[in-house]
Each structure stands twice: as structure tokens, then as C-alpha cells.
Amino acid sequence: MATIYVKKDYKTIQEAIDAANPGDKIIVENGVYRESLNINKNDLKLVGGEDTVLYGDFALQYAFYINNANKIEIQNFKIKNYALWAFYIENSSNVLVYRCSISDVSYVGAEFYNSKNIKFIKNRMSGFLNYGVYSYGSCGGSINYNTIESCGQYGIYITGDMTEFSIIRNNVSRNNNGGIICMGEKNMIFYNKVFKNTGSAISAYSNSSVKGNILSDNTGDGVISSGKNSVIAENLILNNAQNGIYISIYGMAGTKITSNRIQCSGVNGIYIGTGSNIIEGNTVIDSGRYDILRLHPNNEFKNNIFNTSNPAELNVRGE
Image (spheres, one colour):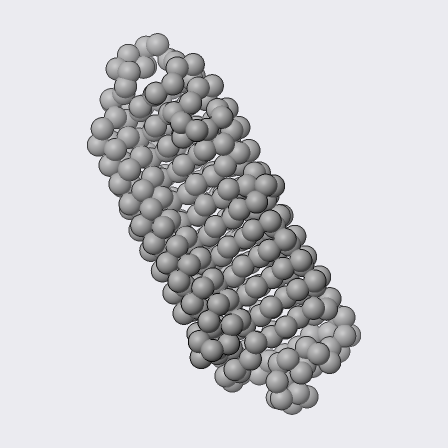
């Protein structure tokens, strides 16, 4: 294992990557690098300095293209003005992107395709035409402790059959279609702050957990659940323009909604569109229409605090 220095050993980052062997570490000194970097080998670590900038001039398509690689770490880069992506990662596994600053990329900040165990940690992202982070057909990833704002579409968009992502402690704000949307199954969406997005804060599908998030001042719903057997618990949901929690009429039941505080929803605090759900221990107040709207019978209500409901006798009948 060797340490390679860009500027001292090689003039460009790509030359250093091409020369590196598995286990090598590449140190990229401060400076502006107008490069698109291709990584298709295993076990490399690239580390920038305090002011290591990859600059695309909106002419280069991407900063990093990682393909058929395993065990790649990329840290401390400032990435600006690329025509399509800052990171495009496909058919790869065990990739860590850590403490990068990404801004003004025309298409997507980071896209994962058909990859496993991608970790995207403590990055700052803003100013994308479409998504901050987009994943298709990937699974087992972690998107944690990032700040993602001012995207033309969603801050985070995860799709695929079995995604199993953890999305934890991110700040997601001021995005034009919504904050976090997860279309696959078995996702954990914990302790995020999702606020001031045009659209809904969080959308989750089946067998997922949405827990401990603060969701405020979004123009859509706080949480949308459209699958089955999910848990929505211990969230603080404030001042969203539509519903606080929306259980879609197209959902397949089995959702547990517990111990949430939902306040000042523009329409309904909790909207129940299916049966066989459990709604327990929630505080729902100051909703624009109803604190709880139940369209489908055969739900279980326990120990909720609310003022208005439809049907009006909901608290007595508990169904």
C-alpha cells in the first residue's frame, strides 16, 4: 500500500488513479482541477485538502464516474459546475463519499445505479436541476448527516423493489417537488429535519419505518404512506399545508401510527384511507379540517388526543 500525491507525484488526479494499486491512498493537494474522473478498480482512497476543487465549467459531464468498483472512499472535495452529475456510481459496492461539498450541478448531485452498500455521509449539497441524491435498483445504502437543499425535484429519491436504505439525520429543505421519497421496501427514515419544501416532506412505501423526524412548513403532506406494514412513530409534524400523515387509499393496510405530535396541518392531521391500521398515542391538534379523518372502517384507535374527527363518534367507537 502506497500514498500518492497529486501535484508532487502526478500532475492530474486521473493519472494518479490510473497508476494506483489496490490499497493505495491518493492525496489531492489544494487547487482547482478541471477533470472528469473514472474509477473502475478496487480498494482506493482519495482525499482532498481544505480547498481541493473539482470544477466542470458546465462542459464536463461528471466529477466522478465509479463503475464496477469495490471499496472506494472519497473525502473532502468541493465539486462545482458539472453538466450532469457530481457522482455517478453503477455496478459497484462499498463506496463511501464523505464530507464533500457539491453545488450547481445541472442534473443530479449523486446517482446510484444497481449498486450495494453506498454510504453518503456528511456532505453538503445545493443547486441541482433535478435530485440531490437519486438511487435506482440499489440496496443497502446509507444517506446520513447530509445537508441537501434547493433541488429542482426531490432532495432524496430512492426507487427499486428492495432498497433497504437508512436515511438518518439529514437536513432536507427548499426542494421543489418534495423532501425524501422512498419507493422501495425496508427503508429506515430516522431523525431527519425536512422543512420548507414545495411538496411533501416524506413519502414511504412498504415495510418501512419513519421515526423521530421533524417535518415542518412543507406545502404538501408531512408523511405519505402508500404501502403496507410500515411504522410512523415519534415524529414532530408541524405547519404542513396538506395532511400531517396521509395513509393513501391505494395503500395495503397494516401501518402503525404511534406517538406522533401533529399540529397546524392545513387540511387533516391524520388521513386514513385504508383499514387494518393501528393509530395509538398521537396528539393531533389545530388542523384545518379534521384532526383525524377516517375513510375506511376497521382501524384500531387507542389513546389519541384530538378535538375533531370524521366520523364524529370516532373516539367512542374506536374503529
